[in-house]
Length: 256
Image (cartoon, rainbow, N blue to C red; front, top):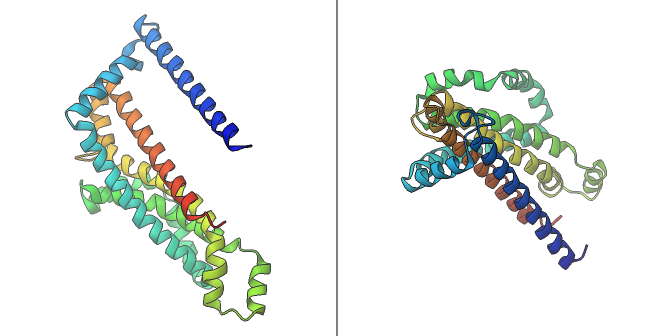
């Protein structure tokens, strides 16, 4: 598809998305206004917009969002770094993986959200417990994708490199690692979302700050408009994080 046609296609899709969203919001407002469904259960778009306006104006949403975003980025950075390190280490030393795999498999099978109270006991109500929960979710996802990417290298490339006299270090950095990067990025994108899920799960159980803590407070006050407003912010935040990671992937993998 030529560039002008591709541009028109993107704008056409965007226009249809805006129209679909507008129709949905108008239908939601109408159903709530005539009380076909009690607004206590579904709120109203106008009420959600009013809540968001006030929450942004007084700084509530930006402050709480910064707490959630900061914990998510920290959990993702630590979890992905550890996952990539162990994944590459296992790819180079398969015997080490066979030794540690039973421990990691057992830890990975544990429901980490159910372990949130234990993280709270260890790290307290502050940001550390949320980072620990996000880390535990991110680590295993990035680890498995890194290991899968490192093992997906075309065997012919490895044989050819060895035939040409390449050292093991050269084969690792010039063949194995570049071949693993695309699969690693798939794990990183998924790990970023799971880091956000882990952090917000920790916030909803017990926290002093964060969007999910604010969500819990609004739900206990039966402020449905506020609940939908915070959910909308969380959705936008997750979408922006995913878009950012996709853009970074496209920029770093231009060599493909």
